Image 1 (cartoon, one colour):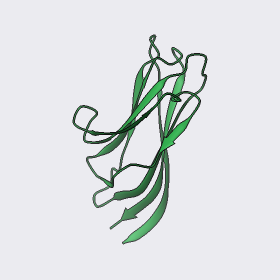
Image 2 (cartoon, rainbow, N blue to C red):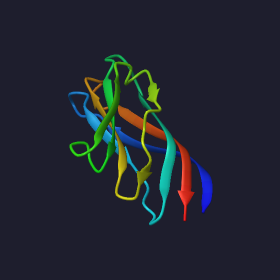
Image 3 (cartoon, helix red, strand yellow):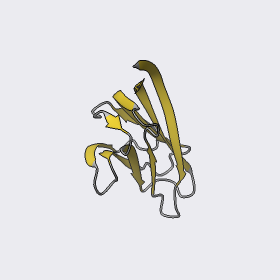
Image 4 (cartoon, helix red, strand yellow):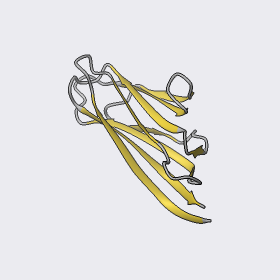
Length: 113
């Protein structure tokens, strides 16, 4: 097995109400992400978004891992489980600046078999 540093991002443009969801996860068979930290931010913060982070197969099927009232300015959580192919890390923003780009960045270790 090879262990490599992980630093990946996913973006979403928030809708007219300032809401949106970004997700990212491993795609290659046998790939495992571990020791994960998720950071959230939005391009502007006139309206400070609330951001919630989930891990699992989908937001509705995933496990809530944390929320922040600093979803636009930027915040992070390191309470994330190991993620395998089929799982993702999700960030859900509500109440941010409409039509702005929100970014989820996940760092940790990527193990490839």
